[in-house]
Image (cartoon, rainbow, N blue to C red; front, side, top):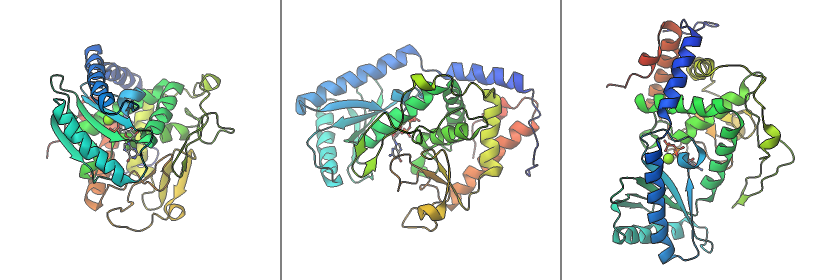
Length: 342
Ligand code: GTP
Ligand code: MG
């Protein structure tokens, strides 16, 4: 159904908000799940420090930034080897070696992908069922995990919105960057960006506040930003919008308001850039730049690059479907989250 400018949801937003908050609470990871994940991490740490005594083993991604929803058995781990040269061939070699080592250590379904853009080994911790993605010296991911964690601690509506959007994206099968839709990391950046745009803003732009207080440079990328969270306490309070209103704003934006032809979403600047500014106007190799989301640190990296013509259509249809369900139904939640069936 078509866009009607200014149209508001039909539902009682107070009631919808109550239901969404219940959903959020039901999606919080249970303690036994967290227990299993930390046991898996410890088993892994033991195996790795035996081989590399001076390595560090970091947790990153959603289990490290509070954005993990329950029944997510996946953890993201980074093996940090201080003296490793930074070219990706060496990382690929380590990934090969890791594959052998993890198999010998009793891990299951070990799958090394040394040629991936970010070389990785995927495996399952034997008796524990936790699925692990382990990467080598993936320092950018550690830094961006901290950035996301810092945003999460500024206003609780970010976590709530991310939970709802991640749950929706899984139900509607649009959360798989290997299949041309968007990664969870990408959805989280879309949520942060939305909250930076609200009037008054719910989130600041941590990379634009001067001077920075957190310093880190990774290769060519300067990853400094402001992280004095104590000083930012209550930042979003002048804005009284509820979760239900923000969920509606998210889908309304991505269904009808985003300028897919020209705009690039940039959490780094707290605003928008153009595709021509980024030189993301034409297809290069497999990178099509149909939905453009700038990585906050790795500035040449368009997180929407995995989207192709076909999946772009799928995504747009899903955003429109969600917006229409919210707009046109008295009681939209069940329909909004209805599992996708081909
Ligand atoms: P779930 O596993 O679905 O709960 O989400 P997640 O927050 O763990 O996100 P995901 O598994 O998509 O990514 C894990 C982490 O990898 C993110 O938090 C980022 O730190 C990093 N990451 C993922 N995709 C990219 C990418 O394309 N570029 C970079 N630089 N980092 C990425
Ligand atoms: Mg993850």
